[in-house]
Length: 196
Image (cartoon, rainbow, N blue to C red; front, side, top):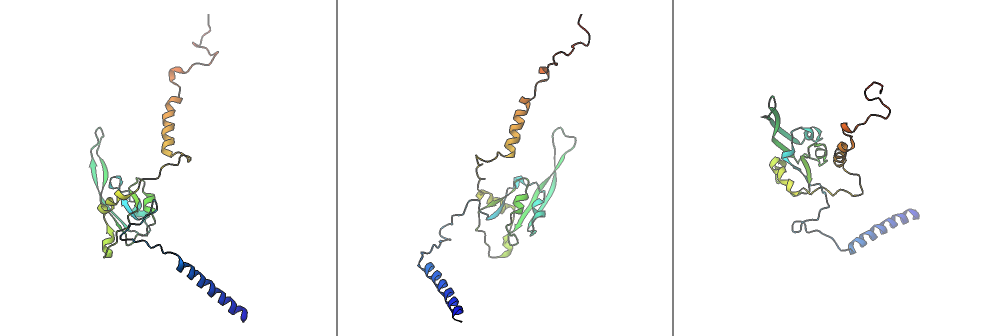
């Protein structure tokens, strides 16, 4: 019995020691409403939309696990000079995200093939009514101003695919010999007949 009571008393002493240590430290309270917090780079706050890049492919809405993205569009005909018939393109009418349902997983940002969705560090968008957390394309477009630029490319890292492809295309025409520069092999007959 004495060993058990000693072990219990030891735990109590350790707990009180932790409490005393934290009581003597200076508190680091942030004065949030008056002083804006310093957010780490590339913070995830809210999803911003670049409307010009959206082609209404619906990948973001289909991949969203919460089904919180609502998209509507219509088709317009675009006359292309020299084409046999006009082309059709989708025009974005509605792009809403319901942030009361969103779990901020970022799948929509990752699957967007046209870079229309970005993470913005904006986090002050609380509302008094839950219905007001449904933000439309205009509000999502305003948050694009707060999206930070992408990080600089690491000089020690591999070059981007686009840079490699561009360098390969630039060097490809120079590497091919011109058709007039091709010479016949030595010893090959020129005219098919024997010299006289």
